[in-house]
Length: 551
Image 1 (tube, helix red, strand yellow):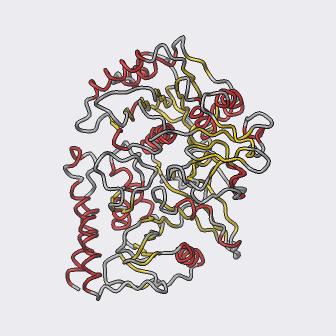
Image 2 (tube, helix red, strand yellow):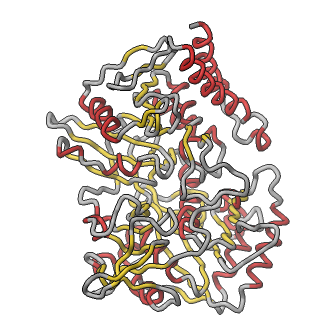
Image 3 (spheres, rainbow, N blue to C red):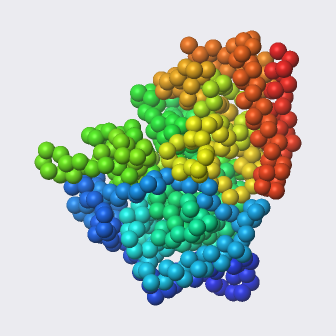
């Protein structure tokens, strides 16, 4: 629990209000146009009756009462228009060079004023599912967006009486205030055609304006939760984590990091044909205490793309809310979602934790391995990185491709290979914090692997190839071979030879490593150097490039 939940004295107040942003964001929460939501069931009824909502009469919610929903509740669906993904270009972060905090504060003040004639809803929830890491979050959202309100209270732990008791008994996080998120999707501004997501991380607050896609509110809340964790000794993770128990009783804890579409959810939830007893922490958001080694999930439910869940799929039994999908009618005249993602390419659903029978909120066993999931065509299906600096640097230069989950600014190539450090585009703190946290974990005995889940030199890496490689690692049977490069070994996989003796391939591999070196070197000046990395990060990549030149 956070320390500064409410005003206690002037000294504490000044500690969290050194800038005007938090006071600006907090003030409208107490307006006479605000209705506080008292239950998940209330949020459901509001969403059900909101204009444009589609009640899927052929898709009843599984065990609704266990999730605070009314008996007989059906899945509710709401579709956005042209915009069906996040807009990273709309983010503005206090403390980042070029961000005019005073000017943006003025814009937010005016936005709040312009919204005074609208009814707003306030909801409270807890981010973090174990008593060792919890942060209270408060959301303000206007009438007309009840479906986003419902998805938000289902995605996190709504503040029921039981959750209040849990939160009150949780570990105190000193010097922090609870998360405040003010939203107004109706807002428009000529200078911000994609909207504005304005974050003041140290103050744990945000204003999300002109944006209606639910992912903005979910990830906006998590952004601040991850920032809180990072400031207090945790590695903040946009990834999946699972624990294998082998038949000999040995446990193996695996964390995978990748953007939407990289396979992180598929890997996290894979059952591996029943070869192991598997417990899943989460497939999207967790934190790892670097010193004490435990991992904690940040949210109970899942926010899944529906492209892999066609009509009639058993997993759809666990859907709670659906977004940006089509609807059709079955033979009985009941409405069901067209989950094949034919409408716009980013159909989504909030899915109940009941989908995963083997879910846990905390894993105490330390990590055994981290995997960076990449879609770099020069990488074989699996590499092993044996040096802590190189392993952390490769995570900092995680190369992948964007997906339909992101709304891109005009002129951005959606197919270009990009670097997204640790697969986390939601970072609001210096990149070096992540680098040092992951380096410390690897120095402490965590193995590091790179998985290419895309194409390798024109040949598709199949899911079966990835799973076979992972299972060999878990079983301890993987036999890695040297590459001649410092700290780099590869796993031979049938049909995917890594031949650095091939001049064409070696040149392509070197080009991608040079890209990584340029990226790291560029952090010294980009954004005023806020993401500058320690010297050993660049040195580890340059050592690989140097070895390639000598081959």
